[in-house]
Every structure is written in structure tokens, then in C-alpha cells.
Image (cartoon, rainbow, N blue to C red; front, side, top):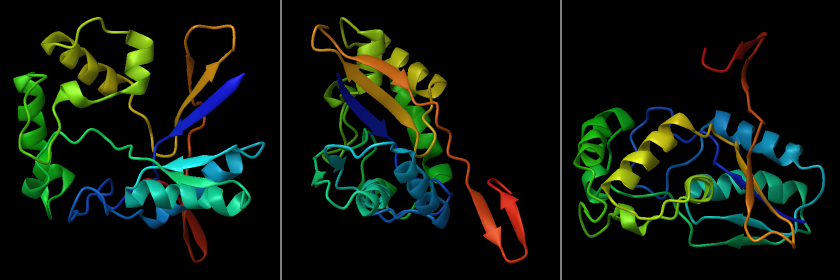
Length: 197
């Protein structure tokens, strides 16, 4: 049986509310680095290959697993998250500052709409979990709304994700959501604070 683990990156500076200069170079926070180490420890056996996107937060998350399994090759694939807002418009802004733009994009519900040359349309994405679980027959405004509802209802915490498996006799892949929840504590001299404190 073949297995693929899809793991979201650790907490990034943007996730923690900091302004991000651009979409690709946002670093991990100290909490995100610690989450990445927990992911590395979650592997019972060495993977055949470790794959990361070229985004700094994804590559940094993968490095903890690379350090644990030094003989396993690391590959960078041109995978990314759905970039539906024009990148130059969002430079040096926070998630909170972009909220109005995000809401306007999803309210528009136009799968072919591109906000600018650096943005993608909904028709250009490949959302693995949604495609496997929901198998949409047509990608139109209803599918776009369904995907957004699915994404919100099935939010993937940092350093969690899905395991895809395929038996050689099966036609398609099976998906199982990762049960692993990475709860990190912040270490302060003399005490330990739970995450979120």
C-alpha cells in the first residue's frame, strides 16, 4: 500500500498576526519551529522522500524531518497554497488588514476571477482533500462556495494534515485526516505556559 502524508506548515509569523512582506518568505515563529520538531518525531519509520514547497515556512517545517532522517532525500516541488489576492496589494499587511479583501473575494464567488497578474483564479487550484472527498462534477460558483465552506469546516491546524493511501487494487486514493494535534508549550524560565497563553 502506498501512503502520502500531507502536512501543513508550522505556525508562521503571518499566522501569529505579524505583517508579512510577501507571500513566499514568511518565516516560522519559535512555536512553529517546535511544531515542526513534533512532526519529525511523529514518523515511526523513515519516509521514502520528503517534499516541501518553495515557501520558506514549508521548507523550514520540512527541515526538522530532514534532520531526523538525514539519508532521506528532500525535494522541492512547485506546490503552493491558493493565492487568490494580488500579492503586491498585500505586501506589509497582516491577516486582519487583509480580512475585508478576503471576504470580498469569496462573496464575489466567481471561479474565473483573477484579482491581478500575481493572483490565481479558483479554477486554477487543486485542493486535494476537497477533490477526493467531495468529487465535484463541475467547478462553478456553487462548487466555489462549497469549497470555501469545506475549507472553513475542515480547517487544518498547523503541522497537521491528511494521510492519503492507495491499495494497488483500488482505483482511487483514500483519505484519512491526521488525528495528530500539535500542542506546543512556550517555555519561560521557571514555568511552562500552554499554547495560546
